[in-house]
Amino acid sequence: MYERWIPEIGLTVSLRPIDRRTDLDLFHRWMNDGRVAFFWELAQSHEELDKYLAEQESDPHIFGVIASFDGEPTGYFEFYWAKEDRLGPYYEPLDWDRGWHGLIGNTRHLGRPKTLALFRSVNHYLFLDEPRTQRIVGEPRAAHQKMLSYCADVAFDKVKEFDFPHKRAALVCCERKRFFREVPL
Image 1 (spheres, rainbow, N blue to C red):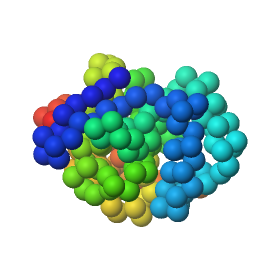
Image 2 (cartoon, one colour):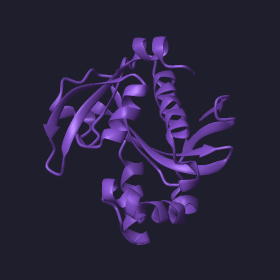
Image 3 (cartoon, rainbow, N blue to C red):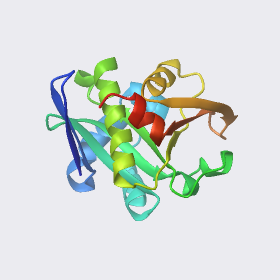
């Protein structure tokens, strides 16, 4: 669904839909890694995670993808329509606002250059996928300074902090015009 060569890291990033049948073991391993589980809170059994993915598949507002570098699965992302997401009530969403949640599960691909390449590619894909999308939003933990720094480097602005039932969050927003003007692709 998306593929792009990233010259600064010498790798091709690609995005494809997650497949419960073939990706469940990988998804389970990533979600049960302590580093990921801390943020995602989905350290569950195969059966519970299969049910989670089945629910995602049946929900038209969200779409799960596997991100890869040179064909090697690297991370999991959930793309969503913000107006229909849990984030919608916490700001004034436009009809075509998109958002994403993401993780890098493959520890070989941790680090700032690869993370920024993935985040730039995810935003690029979301803007290309729907030309009416003018904003991409997110809600990382307000205290997660590393994530907020990554967001700033791919043209997200921190709009405000607010409280979800499960966390203190920062609303971040990436405007289409600023992204294409300032973010190197």
